[in-house]
Image (spheres, rainbow, N blue to C red):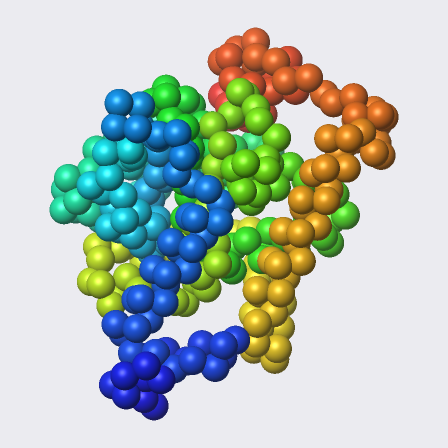
Amino acid sequence: MECDKCGADAIHHAAYSGAHLCGEHLRQSVEKRVKRRVREDGLLDPDATPDDPDRWVIGLSGGKDSVALTRILDDVFGKDPRVEMLALTIHEGIEGYRDASVDACVELADELSLRHELVSYEEEFGVRMDDVVEDDPENMAACAYCGVFRRDLLEKYAAEFDADKLLTGHNLDDEAQTAMMNFLEGDVRQVAKHFDASLGPFDEREATDAFVPRAKPLRDVPEKEIALYCHVRDLPTHMAECPHAEEAYRGEIQSTIHELEANHPGARHSIMAGYEELSALAADAYRGGDGDDADGKEDGEKSALGECERCGSQTSRDVCRKCRLLESIEAV
């Protein structure tokens, strides 16, 4: 199998496009799509200057997606005085797993001379995920606890570092799974929130001071191509899967989408193209007050966000989800 671009040995066949690509042209293809997404989303604030740069916090886990994202962003913006980047790594407290990925994060940050911060559940919350999984006071999947804690720390430190954007390494497969889950759960409000939180171009989102806005520059690139990209560029990457990963429902959706993609190449791209357009319409509808919200309110009346009475984070309740989970864990 030869590369369509140069005739060298191909390492990948992208069935959705029909392209056969060698390592170098796969690298170029991935980088081109990420750069296009950066432009289309308006990631760089047009008003940013060297004296007032756009500040980005990158969630760097050491896995293939976040490593590829960090490397590409540094290639494009590392020497741009209008951009200030910081990599944030979160240690969940999973023995034999996270330590190796932290090593990959440190190696990459050192190579790029990138500011790198490491925080942990144990220091911040007084818990380790290994212990949480063993006790499981809420009788739910490990990812349910971990997702709440991780989001809280990403948002907390992005705000603490006065970031303008929070960037994560979600790829095409991740986003297609989320889209399908929201559809199957009939959660139109979540679809609308998804647009303003991380999908829509920055000039089309509803502005909010409650959270640092997110961006996902890898979301047009399939997971397999990101893995190959890291291999081609010999990037320091921790490829092991979390030993506590057990999102059964997402796993079913993942299998379904893989089968769809195998039988109908391009299915993931089609899912996301339709989902992004519908999420924009849903966002406009809910901003305009059409329909009832999740609390049964009408005519655009939204649940007001306030501060958690325990930790001060933004929440629609008196006590945020993170603090309620920590209370449950402490009661064991």
